[in-house]
Amino acid sequence: ASVLVINGPNLNLLGTREPDVYGSITLKDIEDTVRTYGDRLTIKTDFFQSNVEGELVAAIQNAAGEFDGIILNAAAYTHTSIALMDAIKATGIPTIEVHLSNVFAREEFRHHSYISPVATGVICGFGAKGYVLAMDALADIFDV
Ligand code: DQA
Image (cartoon, rainbow, N blue to C red):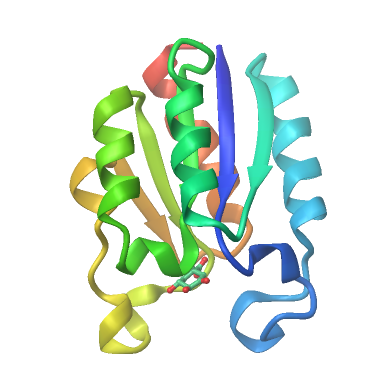
């Protein structure tokens, strides 16, 4: 089985970006952890980050037939992007929505997600651990 981990805008800055909200772990640290965890589960992992909405749409489209699952932290596009929602719907690949922070404990505009209605499930508020929890969830779905 295989999983594509997609991170959206500003997540390339993890480590220095608002560490009080997002912690001091870098995106590379998260990706290394998920890759190692995937190896243990015998799930192949690949990683993509972009600050550009259309590139994220393309990554989801291109995942069709290539990956069995997607872990998506769409960051701010979570709250704005019908295009990402439609892309997930179009591919039909099981997608776990992840957020580092508990978006429901934050500003009102972070409470709505265009991704959640088309996601298999949502994990938020557990920091980088959320990506590992999402791998466990997909492992159950794949039955590996
Ligand atoms: C985030 C939450 C979003 O509201 C925010 O725009 C982000 C990161 C998170 O991981 O907590 O950039 O997706």
